[in-house]
Length: 113
Image (cartoon, rainbow, N blue to C red):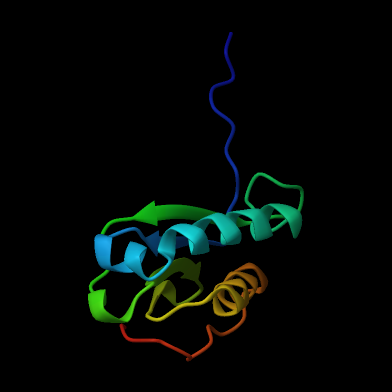
């Protein structure tokens, strides 16, 4: 009898835009660097104590201001989302840590809801 796929509890999901304009502004490297950071800091959902999912996404709509990153997480008030433009590596790591800790998302670069 198979037990099925393993379920990983997560605190949130980060999506890094891989549209052509964001790629031209470094989103491919940002995604790779953020993935490595999540792994080494044990923040990735599959690491012991980790809780962050990271995915590449299509266009997030701030094409002239990329790289763009979107955050989704469940809070007691409901689903929270944050949309960020002009994201660099230090800002991406701060966003990931805030999601993991359940603290307020930084305002730097925020452009959406």
